[in-house]
Length: 202
Image (tube, rainbow, N blue to C red; front, top):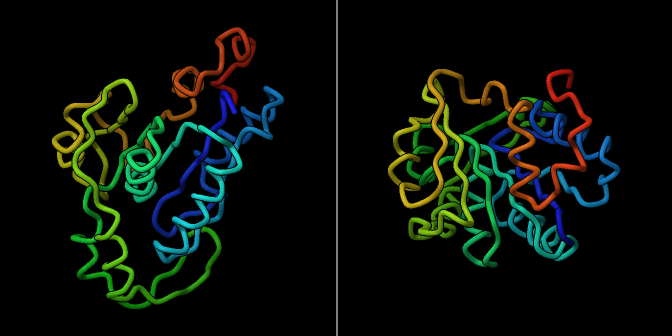
């Protein structure tokens, strides 16, 4: 489906996150809701990848938009299926960061509690792919003020891709909504479709 988008939220996040809601609202205003999927991902990577594979099958050739851990998932799936991916403050090698986080976790949006186990970490490691080399297929949006992830890790890993690095900001990516025209364009949605929308009001 041309112009379709699969949004992949991050660790302990949900479709209720601000970026996801802004994207949903824009696609609704454009009358393109049926071309967007924002699944509520299971906390276990194998389950989450299964959900995402199903969404890709429904959408055909969607643009993968991944935030944080969702950026890691998006990279794996883009490499597997030859898809385009737009990554927002993506996690690089997240399995190497979770050593101190094993145990009880709480989803920031749903209040669901769950146990982060060694099997989660192993499953994440299985998804790692070599650094992507295609600037036509990958856009990577980074903000240097990210308090959760060191943007330089992504800058290095995705150095062969199209990088957009903004000074300041934070892990949630400040000003995401004002960048949505670039996202829609990358998804193959024509500018004439969305030029009437005032993105600053969303």
